[in-house]
Structure formats: structure tokens, C-alpha cells
Image (cartoon, rainbow, N blue to C red):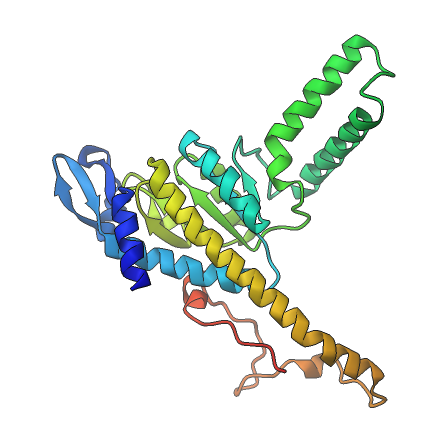
Length: 285
């Protein structure tokens, strides 16, 4: 019943309207239902499939203690991200993607420290100790850094996943995420390349209503993951207290990991899409 309601809401938002058939990417053929009046119609079943897969994966990633970064600098996505993402305590880029935001994260953190320094000066002295020319320069620097980096000022580590609105516009962000092996979840229109996304969600990326529905559902998944994270932490506290008071010798770090049946202890190369199909294992009580 809830899924039927979601499908109706997606259709009402116009998420099934693609680009003109003359401006399509042939790789999007599996996600296209048909063509009407020269405009491709996206298969809503594929949209729901991708959305449910993305929700399950985000819940699992957040439950593991990782964060999610939402990226959407186009006008239709900016207001939606600014309203929805802060409610779940995640990070966002809505103004401009600075090259090296992920691959040169140390420099970005230095710029954020500079932002905190300028804000502290503004709060304490209102730049009264500087000349008018220097005050103008510092205020301009403050506005620029705040505009570009305020959405990720609390991101003290690389995210566990990146959500992209409009693949063609955010190509630099996708390339940086792929270079670092960060999974990407992308809302993809019929003129984009689905191979750039680890979990593609085919849909209209030009409609504010369709973007709002997708972002809202993904934020719900993030909220569910944070609840599981808190529940897991609560279950572990009594165990840690009991283990600290126990006089028995502790197990070695290597013994904490269970080897596979064939003795191979290599990490799994499971893709995000395959990992999303598995549920999060509850913590042992």
C-alpha cells in the first residue's frame, strides 16, 4: 500500500517525463518505457526499483556510522536540499562544487578553519581592528567561503556515499567520488549516462517536485539508518562495560574476525547495488 502511494506521488510529480527523443543517451534505453509527442517516457517501475535500492543502501551505510553528502547545484535542486538535508544532519553542496572537495579534502578543511576564524573575528570585534579596505576584503572572503562550503562545514571525514542530482551538471563530483571509491546514487534523466552511477534512479531531474520526492525518500532512509546507529550504540554500551570489568584475558584483534570456510580472509568486493540487497544485521544483545 505504501509503495502504491509512492508510485502515485512520483507520477503526480512528473518524474516519468524524460528529455526530447532527439537529445537522449542510448544507454538509457533499458529505463525508457516509450515515446510520446517527441518526449521519452521513463519506466516508472525502474524508477521505483532504483529508489528502493538506494533507500536500502543508504540506510545500511548510515547505520555503519558513515555520512552522506547530497550534491545539487541547479536551481531546482538547491532549495530542496537546503530544506530537507539539514533535517537529517547530513551534508550538502548546493552553490558550487569546488574542484578537490573530495580528492583534496585536507585543503577544504583548512578553508573551513579559515571560515571559523573569520566568523570569530566578526563575532568578537565586528572587524573594528582593521582598516575599511581590509574589512571589506575579509567580509568578502567570509561571504565567499560561507556560500561555497557552509553545507559541508561539519563533514570532518569523507562521506560513505554521495547523492547526485543531475549527472551531467555534477560530472566533476562524480569523477572525484569514483576516483576515491565512494558509491554514488544519482537521479538520471534520459540524456545522461547511467554507467556513471553505482545506483541509478531514472527520473526527471528538471522538475522541483520530482526532485523533492526523491530527496525526501532518501532523507527518510538516512533517518532510519541513524536510528539503527543509535540503537546499535546503545546495545554495545552494556557489553563494553561488562567486558571492561571482567578479569578474563581479552581476545586478540585478529581473533575478532571470523575467517571464511576456505580460509580466505580477503575483504568482499561486493558492489553497492548488491550490498543494498542485504539487510543490516542487528547487534547482538
